[in-house]
Amino acid sequence: MQTSDFDYNLPETSIAQTPSEPRDSSRLLILRRDSGDVEHRVFHDLDVFLRPDDLLVLNQTRVIPARIFAHKETGGKVELLLLRRRDELTWEALVGGKVRVGKKVILESEVSGLRSASARSGDFAAQPLRAEIIEALEGSERLIKFSEPIEPYLSNVGNIPLPPYIHEKLSDPERYQTVFSRDVGSAAAPTAGLHFTPQLLDRLKAKGVKIAYVTLHVGLDTFAPVTEDDPAEHKIHTEWCELPQQTADLINQTKQAGGRVIAVGTTSVRTLESAASRPTPYVLHDTNHQLPITAFTGATSIFILPGYQFKVVDAMITNFHLPKSTLIMLVSAFAGREKILQTYETAIKEGYRFYSFGDAMFIV
Figure 1: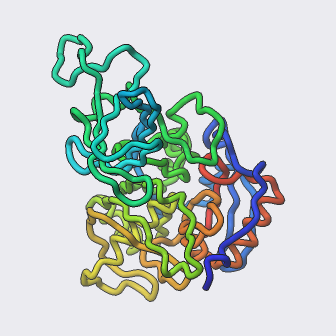
Figure 2: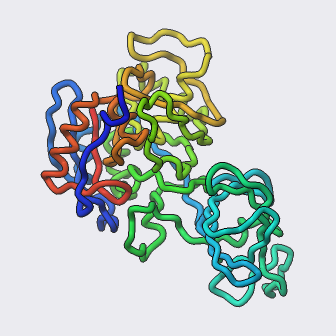
């Protein structure tokens, strides 16, 4: 198995630059794993393919406005992209611009000053918010320390960090959030969830489909291509995730009733399979699944490649992924590499839109 086995040619015109309106008007390609048959629908038709005993698992993470513009005291422009919070003041971040360790930058905002966290009267602080570069990490990653906690200011100084292949300005930042987003912490959206509307979720519930939630905070490494010739040598990114006990109970009930666990997005897949892959004693349920699944909170670096035996996920809803990425490898593990590449070729010919704001697949 080589990384080049997961490559394909995508015309730039196939990369979606803006989201579909309304959300569930995006196209939906149905791929049946057993036969390789493909069906073309619209996302709001999803309820046709779900059954009353199915469980839909959604990632309720919310994207933080992590892109921050700043300038050096000498005036040079600097861009910060927050990745992971270390503590109250310290973050791992991508830093654009030549800023040495020990240097401070001044954050910019749309107003003349920044509200002090200690000011309750609404007055603006005389001193702007600053950040100091305190350690060089890998590549352009740096450890930065803010002069005070950044979270209260993010709505003022932060911008939604769209993926690098999206060049159009997003008029409504909420379109890069799912309608069920709740737990703030992602640097990128769980994009398979962007297709859902409250009305579609209500229809699914009325049909008897159960809804459960997990959280996985998506890192920017999710967009990074695998550069090693052998994908098994790739160092997978680590992300924080949580599968609450209520979701674990619903998974176990669904399996016992013979229903399907349907993961919405590769982030939900990673969370579910991480919870099931721990060295925990399981009760054998059948040849493909093990019970019971229990609650899980922590870091995951699970790398799902072809040959992986899925323990929880029976079907998945996902977007079309970048060539040679860990995500196309994950869906290839689920449906078969050749079926995925053939389906992608069909999708390109049929005019499907790819990547974050693109169309969706339902792999059953």
